[in-house]
Image 1 (cartoon, rainbow, N blue to C red):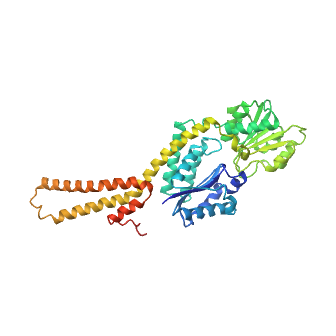
Image 2 (cartoon, rainbow, N blue to C red):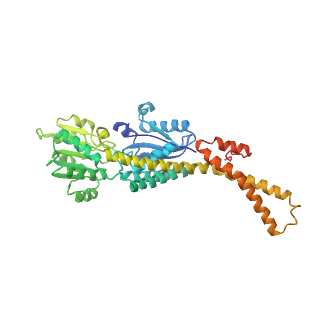
Image 3 (spheres, rainbow, N blue to C red):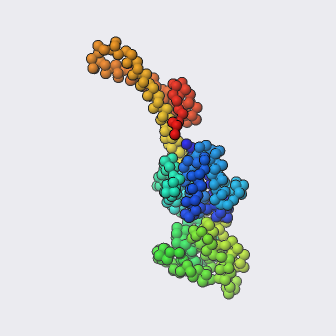
Length: 422
């Protein structure tokens, strides 16, 4: 059955919409239960990251699958379907594979080529299997996408400079509060973005940086690599009181910095401004923090048009060429798999005809010795194979444009292609 991918991503959806649609680990058991009840869906995998919320499904058909998955997303986010009609995208069959390969390669991420997406794709498939949503069709597609993600990184320079995204945010900071040289910074979160932020802050000349994270051990390891200091997450309010720039990327399901925290931090600072760079989805920083006098806030919506440079565009083009090659090979494999039952049935029919004719001629051939009889057997098998060879090759070629030629061949040879009854 065909595969349909439906979802929204950072490319067209606002941070607020992504927040409402995001499905965290605690949401997934119920989500897969709802997907299992949808009549148009046979298999499903949910891919929910800070950049996107997508559902991949093996469906009975495009229209039924589209309606079912759109309803699922709307109900998951407590939305009316019309509220996300504009950023919603759908990819069907080869286009679904093409999209997933691009996601796994990192060319559809905010940080081009970011490596975390590969583990997120792997985890999405494992979780789908654990919740009973996965199956052979999507398992094959997702495993191929992970292999392709590795291939893209091995054969191109994609992802070699992922700090461009953070750099864009810090340039906004300099535009708002002046040069960062000699300034003090706080980084909240010790994941990939936290590491990139510390690297970029050092390059911008920040004098001192503190790292805060829910898991202190991770904060200590990250700080040690980048010459930063560690503070406990419970001390966040005090930490930001002495900061000029704060970069937050925790992935927490709730706000990390409320407007009241920021207002308290600004008390007694005179005219010293603060810049808050929120790289998280869901957001870490309350949007109302930007209303506090002297405070500027930027989130991923402010960075969309600033993160891709010419070098990355060239590498993206190379990855897209590799994707086309991968999709062609996958389409050929699927085409052969769809045709296999027909071709096997055609060969079986030819063998039945051959065996039947030899049986009718058995009396006339009774005087043949074993060698002569095997010669006749080999001759008849060769005749049948050569007669069927051209139609079989031709239908493989023509099936790239659809299944009509396969159906015609089945009708011409009287082969029933209806699926077996359950």
